[in-house]
Each structure stands twice: as C-alpha cells, then as structure tokens.
Image 1 (spheres, rainbow, N blue to C red):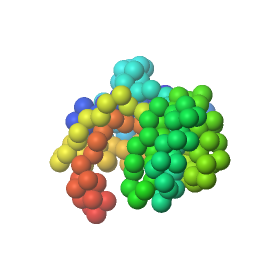
Image 2 (image 1 turned 90 degrees about the horizontal axis):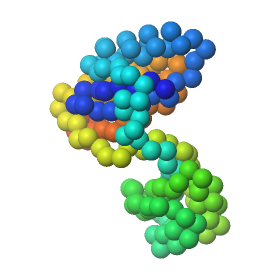
Image 3 (image 1 turned 30 degrees about the vertical axis):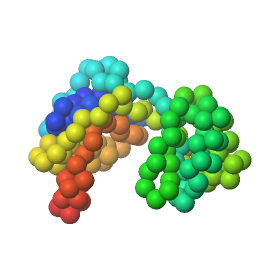
Image 4 (image 1 turned 180 degrees about the horizontal axis):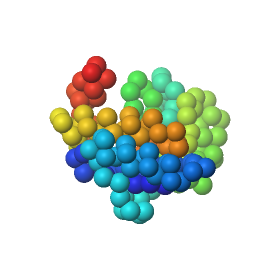
Length: 165
C-alpha cells in the first residue's frame, strides 16, 4: 500500500499490486506530484480507515425487509441510497452471513466487498476538488494501483464541472 495527502488535506490510500516496487513507487509519486498531492510515509493515513464489509442492494427494495434481514444477521448500519436502495455496513467477518440473510429475505444484492471505509470525511470544493479529481484519475491510470480509497466528500458541482472539462 502507498498513502499520502491530496489537495484540501484529503487522505488517500492506494492498494498496490506490483512485480516492480521501484516502478510502482515512481509512477505513484509522479501522480501525487502532478496531481498536487504529497506521497506520505507508510501508515500516515491508514489509521483513518477501517476494513468494513459493504453491501449494496438493488433498487426498489422494502426498507423493513432490508432492516430485519441485515440487523438479524449482525449488520452494524443500514443507510438509504438513491431509489429505494440501501448500503449495509458489517464487520468483514459478517459480510457473507449478512448478504446470505438478505438474499434469503428476497432482497437483491447488487454488490458486496470488504473495503477501506474512512472514519470521517473532509468536504472538498472548488480548486481543491478539481485538483483531487485529477489526482484520483492519475492514480487510476497507474497500472500497479488496484484500488484507491479516500476520505473526501467532493462537491457535486465540482464532479460535474470536472467530468465536462
């Protein structure tokens, strides 16, 4: 893993899988520099994230059914997202049991994965948001970077402006 800070003080954690550490480190350092961030030392931001099981349901599901099935199976949190869809957070060890419980209750599971979830988020707007989105794109282009986690809450208007640029 490689970690550091992006524009606006956003913590960034990269899962890296490589057969050449020097090349990967060079590519990632270059992306951080070009994207206005700073590559940090190992552990500089990892403590701000926790491994969590995250399940997303399909849309149009019944809230009570989701709540009952998820909580009974040991889920920690259930939150509504979008059009009658839900995100369920679990301990990593409980992920499979909760997903199975949801499916048995007739709830469609769109995705399930163990992810790094930030303890808190940093609001990012304007120039910082644009710079961060560019940095995330640059990291995404690095062949050795598998997944990028960050703790930014990026303003919707900045995302729209960036995708139109």
